[in-house]
Image 1 (spheres, rainbow, N blue to C red):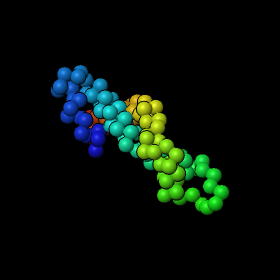
Image 2: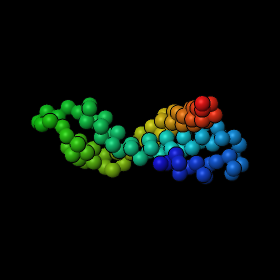
Image 3: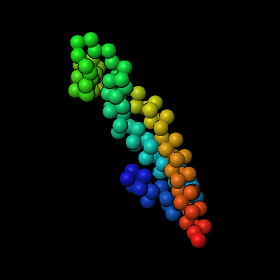
Length: 110
């Protein structure tokens, strides 16, 4: 959905160059948005997996409340920039490869 949103904005008809560059940039933008939006859930998941609750079995609510008590809402977004830098380029390359494969297969239909 995000990838398709960025496509008209970053298309080659807007003077960005080839379709490949446009596909790469749209993928990077979509990957960055996805990584940033899902950061709080990833933070909760990671803390849940590494938690050592002595008194009870950890669950989503208990992990979330522990994070919020200890660091506030900003604790959910700690590491977002690094996560975006890690995931965005990979998504860009993935979407570039996907679009190239689609174009190749469409051109070589039998």
